[in-house]
Length: 200
Image (cartoon, rainbow, N blue to C red; front, side, top):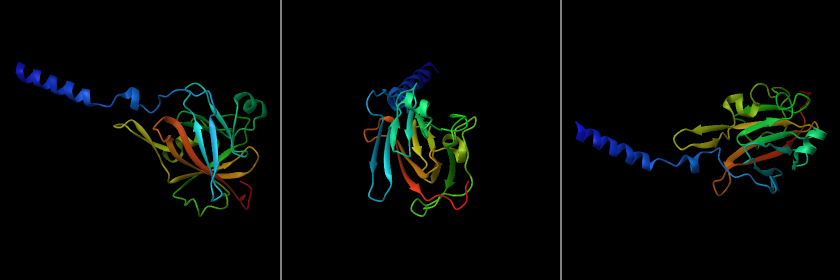
């Protein structure tokens, strides 16, 4: 019996030694950047690609989707002109729980083809409540793999953002990791839509 217990103990230690190191693989770890936190690249199809450095665990990155740029915290709060804010895997909007004085609203579309969506929908717009729309509606923008400890984006979800300036944009979350595998460096694409035929 003692021999069997010893063998099981050694086997358990061997398996534990092969397990992934959560300090490296855990998706909510990362180094904060003091440089440019938003990089926007226009695409030939009229859309834009945004890379958001949201690695700082204690600060939000404010994004003005109308102008396609980062808003520093003081400017964002003073002007109330920001649209989306990113902090690790959490995406909030300038409206509702994210900011009760904000006018941003978001509609979530499931199974909608990106290219086929040219006009914003007339209904379905929400503001953040106890949980952000991006993280809660239709199960949120990502799935979490408990074995690999990684986030995977749900590209079947499209978000239509009614911005602080009253314009409409379709948004698709693309990745939580950059090309080197660093977490909380989110990629998304967005493109302006025609306004809906009736005001939402």
